[in-house]
Image (cartoon, rainbow, N blue to C red; front, side, top):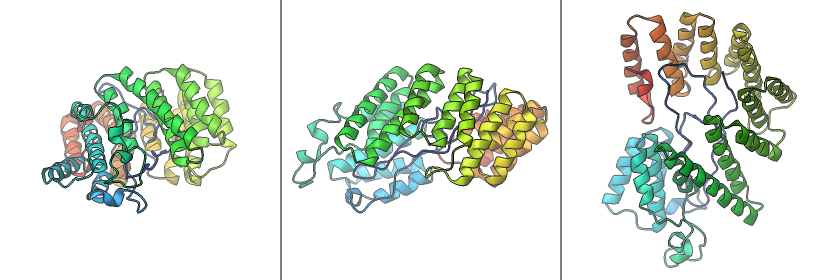
Length: 395
C-alpha cells in the first residue's frame, strides 16, 4: 500500500553551541520490490536527506569552537568524508582546547560515521564517553576557569539523540527505543523547568515524532496511533499531523476513518509550517492515496500530476505517479517520469527508494538492464552526497 504524509519537520536549534542534528537514515531498499516514498519528515521511518546544524550564532559558544562554520558548511553539502578528515586533522594538531569543543567535534564525527553506514565505529566513539551525560564531568560549572559564570550541560542535544539512534543501526532496536523514551523523559523534564522555552517544546515533538517513525516501521500501529493522537492534541489545526493520522489509519486498515481524516484536512488552511503550495500538494497526495487503495490508478496519476505541476520537486508525487503508471502496465512512461525527475531536480530525486524503484523498472523493461543500471550508478557516483547508498542500484 502506498503511504503519504507531510513535509519536513526539522530538528530544533541547539541549546548553546551549534549542535548538528541527525535523522534516521533510510532503510535498505528491498531488491525484490518497488517502494512508495514518503516525504522527508522527522517522524518517518525512512527519511532520506541529512539534517544539519543551524549556522553559528553570535550569542552562543559557537564562536568559541574551533572552525565550526566549516564543519557546518561541509554537512550541508553531504561531504561527510571531508568532515571526518577535518576532525582527524584538527585533533592531530591539538587545536581543540576546551571540553565543549571536544564534545561538539565528537558529535559531528558520530553523525558522519552514521551517515556513511559505519555505525559500529560510531557506537565505539559513543562508548568512549562517560555514561552519565548529566554528571559533573559534562557541566560548565565544573570548569569555572574556562567558562566563568556559565552553568548547565555542555552535551549537545544532537549527541543525546545519536546516543539513542546508533543502537538501532547495529541491530539493538530495543536498546535504542529504551534510550529514545529516556531522552523523551529528559526533554519533558526540561520543558517543565523552562515552560516558556519553545526550543525544548519543539525537541519534545521531534523525539515523539521519531518514536512514531520507529513504531510505524515495525507496523506497531496501536502505539503509533496513540503517539500521533498525542501530537495532534498539541496542535489540532496542523494539517501535516492530521494527514499523518490518516496515513496511519490507512495502514491500520481503517479506510473509512482515513477518508474522514483526509476530509478534515481539506477544510483546514496552510499554516506557518507549510506554504500554500505545500498544503495543496498535501491534500492532493491524500486524495491520491485513497485512489491507490481503491486501485483507481488513473485518478491517482491525475492527482499526482497536479502536485508535480505545482511543485516539480515533490519527490513523493513523482515516485508514486511512476508506481501508479507501472501498476497500470505503462512501464515505459513510469521510467520516463523517474528519469526526468533525476535530470530536473537531482538534489530532491536522489533518494535510495526512488532510485531502487527505477532500477527495478529497468530490470522489468530491458534485457540489458545491467548496462543501464551501471550508467545510472556512474552518474550517481559523480553527483550524490557521501551518504547516498549506491547499493540500491544493485549493480
